[in-house]
Amino acid sequence: GAIAGAFGATMVYPIDLIKTRMQNQRLVGEKLYKNSIDCFRKVIKNEGFKGLYSGLGPQLIGVAPEKAIKLTVNDFVRTKLTDKNGKIASPLEMLAGRTAGACQAVFSVHQVSFLNLATSGSCD
Image 1 (tube, rainbow, N blue to C red):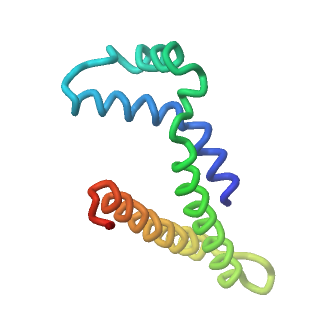
Image 2: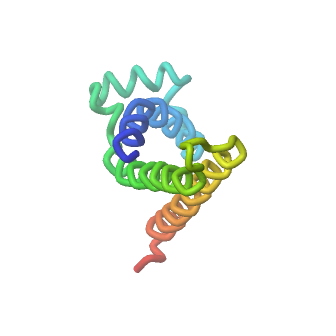
């Protein structure tokens, strides 16, 4: 689960980086980029290809455990709900997915709350 989550996050990270930079320029007031393609080109020009992945480390630290929790809980619940013939009814399969999603959401909310506290200086 952690490896799959980390791989997925790595694949979409450049898109997320561009989106974040486009959103942040609205907060600053000064427009650095005309559009997403312009932002992409400027990141490559000014920071190189590696610039598209700047800040990936902290993202992976958060995503890997989150996905590992989701997939582990899903497997655990599915195992408990599977009958003696190795079959699981669709409603029980959905229950396993919802349970796993709820556990992932709890972890995500905790992580976001911690980051908000840390960036506001309230964690001292």
